[in-house]
Image 1 (spheres, helix red, strand yellow):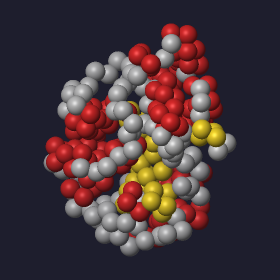
Image 2 (spheres, helix red, strand yellow):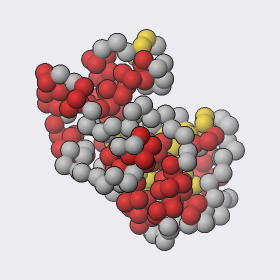
Image 3 (cartoon, helix red, strand yellow):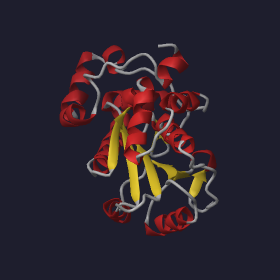
Length: 249
């Protein structure tokens, strides 16, 4: 297999994608691959996260050129963008690998409403703050469709909000196994705690407490297949992850 040059950390909106990226980053650094700011200002829009808005052929070519000059393991980038054909080709060829993080659509919608009240990213539609749960559903649908395209590729590791937030050491081990490296997963998980996030509440299965029975059932019916295939309804995580430590749950 071709040596991976890029590791793409993709996440749905409000899915815990920033903690997932930080776990990845710490796994790579623990394995001896420093992850400094990528000096490509036309592509990297948030240097602290090496965040990329879009991965079209031009952006991907520049990132590949940069990665080819970097020693050791892949460089990690974070994105919320859809999967362009050029990225799929890189995944097929083996020089790109990654993970894709999802969350139950009902909780994504609730978290978008939180973001709207705090005037944060993902809390608006057409420039206007979200006012009702239904206002968030267009964004939820768009994000679930994007996630599926990423997660269905065999070079991508599917992860969930609950796994990232509440079973962090296991996620670190999964990423290390995917990369084929030996690391101190407990140290990687602990290091991820030290990085600030934009988390709203750090609660899983919010829909059970915060949505009416009618709204819960309606959204659940629309996303039944997505929830059954990708989400974590049956997952009961240990109380040792990033979110349980940050929020005391």
